[in-house]
Amino acid sequence: MDHVRSEVDVLDVKAQTPLFSAVGGRHLACVAALLKAGADPNGSPHNNCPPVLTAAREGDAAVLRELLRFGAEVDAGSRAVPEWASGGGGGAACRGALYISAAYGHLAGFKLLLLHGADPDYNCMDRTAPGRAKRAQTVLEACLRYGCGAEFVRLLVEFGADVFLPALSGGEAAQQNDALALLLRERACPKTLMSQTRLAIRRLLPLGDKEPAIDMLDVPLILRNYLKHQTSEHI
Image (tube, rainbow, N blue to C red; front, side, top):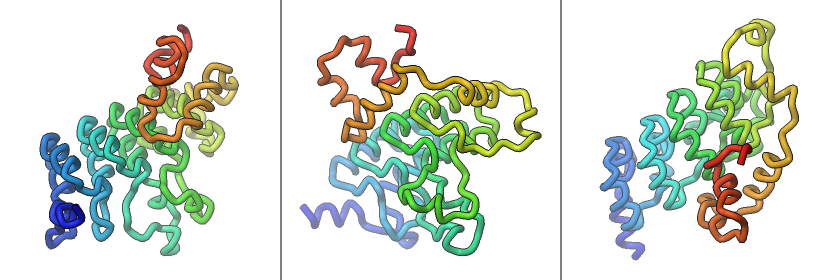
């Protein structure tokens, strides 16, 4: 089995695996076949860009879902030396797949990553990186910076993002747009009990793909759908 896996993860001159190439080409059937054959969903550690980051950038939700189903790191980002380690501002330290999905405006992939446990605040695998960075940008700040729609901000709030982390300048606070208005409204209003309960239950579920575990809960279907973020609070 190890021999088979080593062949399916063979590297080219750029340290790219066949899976990396299939993801970059958006070839879903090839991606599925390689993963079923034992390909590492995180690609090669010698390559700067993991497959999940490429899928997030390309906006291919089907490919992204397949990678996550086979255990790809949901908060994976660039493997280059982050800016905090090289004396920079720290912006690159927290630019994982969720951040990239927001920057490129891919809402379906954005929600899919959140459903699989992506960090809604500082989108990085190293939880100590934001504290060491001079200026680590949250995903909420990225959404405002790149002009993402209010739906991106709403999803971040639903999945537990800290609405008080973004530091808004006077100019930003004066801007009139739906995303910023939603953020300011959420700062003024505490989360509902239903929303807090959903966050708490989802945090207790150990799996990245939480849907199977939710389906096993002995609660009405309408509540299971709410836990999956398939219905609103008005149920």
